[in-house]
Amino acid sequence: MLTLIDRLERDRTLPKGDLVALIDGRGPESEAYLAARAREVRDRVFGKGVFLRGLLEFSNHCRNDCLYCGIRKSNRVVGRYRLGQEEILACCAEGHALGFRTFVLQSGEDPHYTDTYVAEIVSSIKNAFPDSAITLSLGERGHDAYALWKKAGADRYLLRHETRNPGHYARLHPASMSLPNRLGCLRALRGLGYQVGCGFMVGSPYQTTGHLAEDLLYIKELSPHMVGIGPFIPHKDTPFASMPAGDVGLTLFLLGMIRLMEPNVLLPATTALGTLDQEGREKGVLAGANVIMPILTPPGVRGKYLLYDNKICVGDKAAECRLCVARRMFGVGHMVDQSRGDHPGFRPGGPA
Image (cartoon, rainbow, N blue to C red):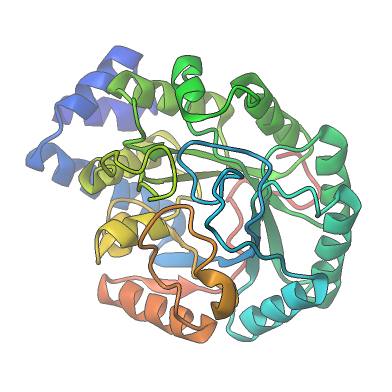
């Protein structure tokens, strides 16, 4: 296994069969070795700084019915909410005062927020806080919408591909959703000059090691600026309520693999990791991650944006989250970096 890790670091990819063998053959020795290699690569590129992103979940309405998601349209139990433009700006103002220089605007696929309305929101944030980056995570929209938002000032876009395998994708999503369309959205975003993020759940229902290898190879093909992975966690009001959660150890191993394959990538230690393991985010950083996303969503509605059960930090205030993350990162030998935290290859106004 150690030889495969060395080859992965040297070649920045492996054939699918070798990726499967590396994942299936992991054990304490290879896990420790991979994490050490990933940390060295990450530190060489980024140093000991961990970038902060202020996550603002501004609507939990969604037109989609993904089988794993707690805010799927068929969930009649969840209390729905939407934040208006002024509420969003107020959250960003609080975050800016706390030192955040990237705001991540995330929601379900909510038609209430038209292409024009989103552009107005983006423009207002950019005008108020010109030193800050804006990341959007609003799902699948058309090329014209993405172009409009880029022109309004959006810098980055997160769209998890969830799985590169068409058969697996069909078992996680309703028939109305299409893997080719999702991958087409990622290509469009790349072409428009966004810093683009993809990603997948680890341990999602029906996932095989072969699927994970295909995901890694897709990441290598797309060469994104960001990759978001986290363990699957079931939600009690979805068809997958009784499915087991993903494995934290496997998630950490895959974080290390992604770091070796894409040394410059922006790689979050996700809230889902912290939900399954009290020290999950710290372990994620020690496995090669370099981004943490504290929540800026108003406490009054945080508990309604539950993609999965038992999500951490839903009762905390933004300042509490910010201070907590700083303490946690200091505890594992890292410091928060309050810059925009762009991808090293990003050039403002240039191609992605």
